[in-house]
Image 1 (cartoon, rainbow, N blue to C red):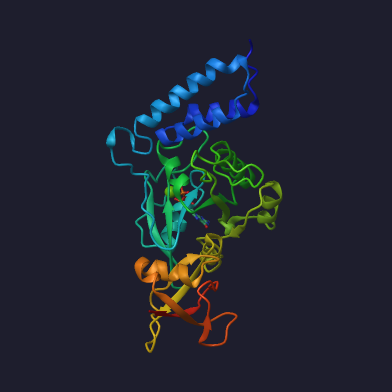
Image 2: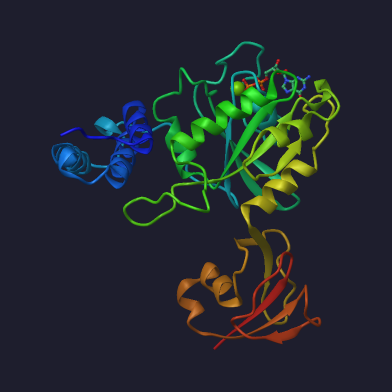
Amino acid sequence: MPANLTPQYLKAEQWYKSATTVEEKILALEEMLRVIPRHKGTEHMRADLRRKLSSLKDSGGKKAAGGHVDVFHIPRGGAGQIALLGLPNSGKSSIVGLFTNAKVTIAEFPFSTGAPVPGMMYHEDVPIQLVDLPPYTPEFLMPGQIGTYRHCDLIAIVVDLSNEPEMQLTTCMEFLESRKLLLDAATPAVDDQGNALGRKVFCIATKSDLAEAGAVEQLRASCGYPMEYVPFSAASGEGLDELPAACFRLLGIVRVYAKRPHEEPDMKEPFTLPVGSTVTDLARVIHRQLAENLKSARIWGTGVHDGQNVQLTHVLHDKDIIELHFA
Ligand SMILES: Nc1nc2c(ncn2[C@@H]2O[C@H](COP(=O)(O)OP(=O)(O)O)[C@@H](O)[C@H]2O)c(=O)[nH]1
Ligand SMILES: [Mg+2]
C-alpha cells in the first residue's frame, strides 16, 4: 500500500535529516509522528519512528552527545537573552561589539565568528544579554547552534540593508520556519510537554548608512510575517537608543524597584518580571518563602496615588516602586 506522504510530513522529515543534535532529532521525530497520515500504508513507518524516538530519548535527550560540554548552551544572564541570526557579514558582531564589552571579531571576511559570544547590553538600568553567533547559510550551520536559538527568549534577525536584504530575510525566515522556531498563532508547534517551540523574533535592519531610501519599508512589505523592524547602523549610530529600547519592549518585561518600610528604595538594581506580574510575583522573586508572609504593599508609580495601598493581585507597571509589608 502506498504511504501517500504529505508535504507537511516531508518537511518534518527534512528537519530530521538535517538535525545535528539529539534534542532536534527528538523534536523532528515527534513532528513526523504528529503529521504522518494514519492508515495501513504507514503502519510500519510509524512503528519505526516510535522506535527511533524512544531510543533517542533513552540515550539521554538533552545532554550533548558523548557528555561533552555544549559550547552553544549559553546560560541566561540579565533580564532576557537575545540570539542573533544572520548571513555572513550581515553585521551581527558589530552590534554585539557596540553595545557590550564582549570581545567579538568584526571582519570583512565571512565566518569570522566561530562560537557564540555573549555580552551584556543595557537599556537604561536593565541588563539584556545579546549572543553573537556564527552565521547561518542554507549550506551550513554549526552543529549545536540551533540549540542557542531554541533556548533564547528572543531571536534578532540581522539583515544587511546594503546587500539583497529581501533574499537575506527570506533565507533566515525559511530556516526558522523549517525548524518550527516561529510562533505561529494558528498552529503553534509544541514539544511533548506542551511547551511552545517557537520563539519571538524581530528584525534588525542594519547598515542603514549604506541603504537606499525606503529600504526598510520595502523589506517589511516583502515579508508576510508580522514582526518589528528596527533600522540600525553601527557606522552612523542610527538606532543606538531605539535598538535596546525595542529589545526591552519585545522581551515583554517590566522593571520594578523594591523598598522596605521607612527606607529609601534600592534604585540600583531593578527586578525584572514578565509583563502582567503582580505584587505577589515580585515577592516570590525576592524570596519564595517570605512571599507566603506577604501581608500588604504600597506603590509609587503608574495608575496609583503615591504610596497607595494595593492588593497583592495588583499588576505592576514598568518603573513602579513597591514597598512590601511582611507579617
Ligand atoms: N557601513 C557599515 N558597515 C558595517 C556596519 N555594520 C558592520 N559593518 C561592516 O560589515 C562587515 C561585517 O561585519 P560583522 O559585524 O563582522 O558581520 P558578521 O559576520 O555578521 O558578524 C565589517 O567589515 C563591518 O565593519 C554598518 O552599520 N555600516
Ligand atoms: Mg560575526
